[in-house]
Length: 333
Image (cartoon, one colour):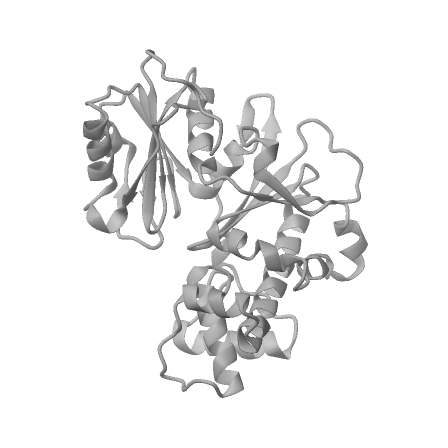
């Protein structure tokens, strides 16, 4: 677990990380999470985020909070956030009303991860690709790529006014199609979904979908067969099942290719951070299944891409830390 502050008598802030399945909530003293304050709630057990936060505050003895910052797995604007995989709409006004906070800020979940990069300890980072470039200059651009319930990415800029992480929805761009196999997969996705996006293959559901397509091609299942649960597929992969391994190699190749393309978009000399439950589940397979080769597979820019280090962020509470850091940095604005 990440370092956190001891109990503090000052009025804390309330921070929340709202995923497609669960919401994590914590108190923060300044930019640091308050020790022992993190709790997790199942979204299906609550009608709204406001209900989750009200429950949390009641469970903590009616704690008064100064401000709140919420990270959302979906598109946000300053006035509203909508979850991609859950029918919740979240506004700053409703958050203030539910929590009693004087101000409320909304972030996309990848924005929160970007704001957390300076807070995550080195012990919670694992190198994926070391990078061959010189040590990055202070304030160098960084990039966070999230692979979990969904897919997204965001650049992280350091300026005179602090950290800037613009919102993005990178998962809903077109899936890369490098060879005939990718083209066939994309046509299959389009037939049922209307569009073959990055997130349609690079996400939890995307992984199950990709495995199902490989099973269809291999003649192992019928077209109308139900997709296998992700947990079962990962167990088969760990056991060395050839079909699961073939699908995983394809998955890792797509992941590397997309990560390389995103790196060229923002030139993050400060490093590329991979985050999310699916990314971490595939961590043992990235090197073995060719993530690095796919990352570099960009023609005459392949050598150039060797400069950029890639690392895995292994901290479940990074988004909460990012919310705390962002809210604290905005206290005088």
